[in-house]
Length: 193
Image (cartoon, rainbow, N blue to C red; front, side):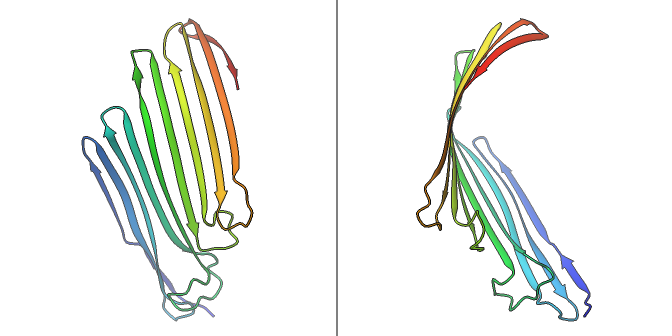
C-alpha cells in the first residue's frame, strides 16, 4: 500500500554570549504526516544546548551540554498510537565538565578537567542504555624554547547502570613528552607513557 509522506522540520536556534557566560543551542520538531494514514502521524523532538561559565576569572570554568533526540528505529515497521514507544528511540545525554585552567608565569600551563557524561535511552538492548562515562585529566605543559614538554595523566571510567553485577570499566594512562627545538624547522623529542 502506498502513501504520500510530508516531512516538516521547523527549528529554532539561539546564542547568548556575555563576559563570563556563553550559551548556544538549537531545537527542532521532525513532523511526519502520512496523507493516506498508512502510518501514524508523529512529531519527534530534538534539542542540543551547550553552555560555558567562567565561574572564577581565568581559573575555574564549568561546561555543560544537553542533547535530546527522538527518532524512528525502522521507518518500514508499523507504528502504534502517537504516545507509544514502539519503534521509537529516545536518547538523552547530558554532560557537566568542571575544570581549572591557567598559566603559571609565561612558560607553564595547567589543566585539571573532569568530563562527566550521563546517557539515557529507551532501548533496553542498547549498550548506551543508562550509562555514565567519565574522563578525568590532569596536565602540565612547559612552553619554552628550546626545550618544552608536558605531563598528562588521565582516567576513563565507563559504567552501565542496568547491567547486573557489571563492574566499572576503567582505563588509566600517563604520558610525558620532552621536545628540543634545534632550529625553527627541526625538533626532536621523546615520548613515554
